[in-house]
Amino acid sequence: MGASAFEAVIGLEIHAQLQTETKIFCGCPTSFGAPPNTHVCPVCLGLPGALPVLNRRAVDLAVAAALALGCDVQPRSVFARKNYFYPDLPKGYQISQYEQPLALGGGVDVEAGGQTTFVRLTRIHMEEDAGKSLHEGFADSDRRTYVDYNRAGVPLIEIVSEPDLRSAGEAAAFFEKLRQILLWLGVNDGNMEEGSLRCDANVSIRPVGQAALGTKAEVKNVNSFRYLQKALEYEITRQIDVVEHGGRVVQETRLFDSAQGRTFSMRSKEEAHDYRYFPDPDLPPVAVDEARRAAIAATLPELPEARRQRFVAAYGLPAYDADLLTQTRGIADYFEAAAAASGHAKAASNWVMGEVLRRMKDTGVDISRIPVTPEALGGLIRLAEEGAISSSVAKGVFETMCETGQEAAAIVDAGGLRQISDDSSLEPVVASVLEAHAAVVAEVRAGKDKKLQFLVGQVMKATAGKADPTRVTDLVRRLIG
Ligand code: ADP
Ligand code: ZN
Ligand code: MG
Picture: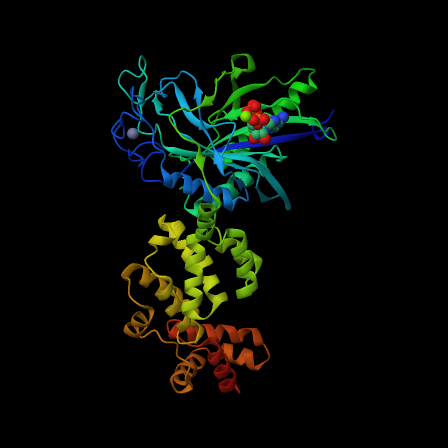
């Protein structure tokens, strides 16, 4: 059988850190990068007698994510103990939700390969993070492993998808889409390097046309879009290869090695943990009544998809622009403020997609740190749209605004950069250009109209780009006669 006789079936499990100041069951800070074991207390270290108290803010953020993803938030959910032994888990169990999660259902539209698919979510539940084992970086790392509990007890949501994804590219697009929404909500910071957003991928193959699911492998450690795609591509090919050679895919957990671009077996089904889940007797059920649900729903911002559609409908922007401008909420806000300040939506869109995004990329800063406010950009756009400055001058003024923080009008006035469009100022310049290029003038007279652009270019050069090119073209024609 050829490779095309099989299709891939993929479901993702995504862990996202909730952006709270403090941990889920204690008051320790969640900030990243502190010296090891400085953000710890008896609760998150699991010392005897210490009792957890649920962080209300964590629940609010989890509910916001669930509502934005179209899930049914459950009026009552229950924390359970997931028991297993590992050094990074000080209590010997992780507090998670199991039989009664915070939210059920929901889903998102995913665009990949020119096709839109609705990917259903199974559930969203809350849980605490474990600590972090440090295998490298110490003088005795060949003999010892250290453990940092700063991350233990950091609040997470786990988002579980249905096995609705059919390709590596679609899975990566789904992960990106979730990241965009979580960032947009301010629920998660999207930082995959620091581990605040992580993904496990479940994948199986089956003959095209078969309804029953094949045996899946779970691939851990795929914490970038590119690695997720690569790991899945490798794993799909591997499974097809196993089947084509008369073998059977075994249920197992595999690890992705990004250096080798391969997945490796980590543990088989037989070695799978029995977590002995049971409700945590130290924590009452989480109650989210209708009033609280409605209050959180009222705080939700307009979501990326809705905003994208509004940008097309309300500002008449091309879909391409609307897509780019709604990458992040910060960019969308910046665009709308610049559009309002300038009164020229399409020009504002061009400026944001062009100079502003380029500046962000070149300097590696977020839109919130761009030295030009959208209001100031609006001022620059007005000058350009009113014809007070030429478009080439406008780009230079933007650079100066970034460097000095000055307003556009001040830079234009101080530099004498206003566009020259009155004939009395332009005529002497045009006349001297024609005089200097008599041969070209003769060619134009002989009907070589293309040469006219050369003469216009010379006038632009002589005025340092300040001349109004339309006026100059008129004048050149008139003076040549
Ligand atoms: P487990 O019991 O191993 O935890 P679940 O049924 O809870 O498995 O599913 C975990 C994840 O694996 C979900 O994202 C789900 O969509 C996905 N999944 C389940 N079965 C398959 C399969 N046969 N192939 C691919 N993904 C699957
Ligand atoms: Zn603590
Ligand atoms: Mg499961």
